[in-house]
Length: 399
Image (cartoon, helix red, strand yellow):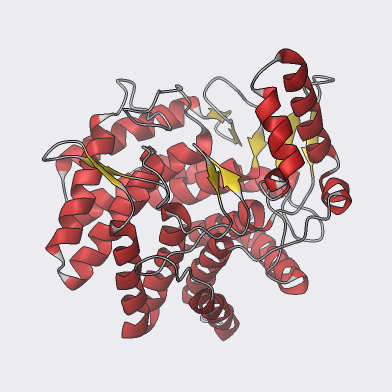
């Protein structure tokens, strides 16, 4: 089996599907913004009968994802995060193949992003095109740190590819937005950025995404204030690493849930790796190595199938597949054993979760009703196609 050819063929089929489909698509969270669904979700947190109703409804959404969206009149939308991920993937593919069509596609994504940032906050930020809920309801298109740094990474990649200052200027505007997010100053050495401008919270992967971007752009333009903020944010997260090397999703003073899932662990690893390279801080490398060893040992079945958590195989989420391929291929420069696992995950995912039309399915779920696994075949755009293109294009660079 020629793994490189298999990946090239998979990317080609996926890219053809995206081109035929257009940028708009469905998302796991689009149907959950409906007021009826939000009410059922709230009821499900209060008593057993309502919980059964909620879980049954959500399973129907998984089994009949397209039908349920048509029934509730949910429309496909263009997602800024998907556009950022697509842009960076196409820049990578242009660098690998020197095929101008990939640069043109990256540029198309960037041009859409140029026109669709939020103008209600300082700097430039992007958000999700649907209502979602954390501590409270987040209105659609409210810019947040996760989407904005994904978009920022695409602009920075375009800047590195073209050396055109206009892309770096957008990165500076993004840093302005990020520094206006609510910040919890823990002490002189630690702080934590919040997810959105709306309220203060403590989420490790978000905090590291913001930290990494501020350090990266700060070093590029010699802005010591941004570098300092980024380092203090990184210090907060690594100070809260568990003894086994893992990271909870939340950080103190949030009530810790002991929730450690596959793709958020990958995101922590990716940002720690970049921050270590940017700062050359040996302490960050120690944190990175401990987290990596825990990840490799606990998050895979047979070094091939990405588990949802160390304790749970299901759901086998396409987001986990994509994030693991991206993470392991990127970190293979210092942890070369990860490249073998990344290839196995890619082969398994292409075989089990890529449709003959080219798009990737949502994942394999275990029914709460029957106890049997089933595949949810909806072609989510951000969650599935954008992340898989990002993961596979990065793997192709490394092999």
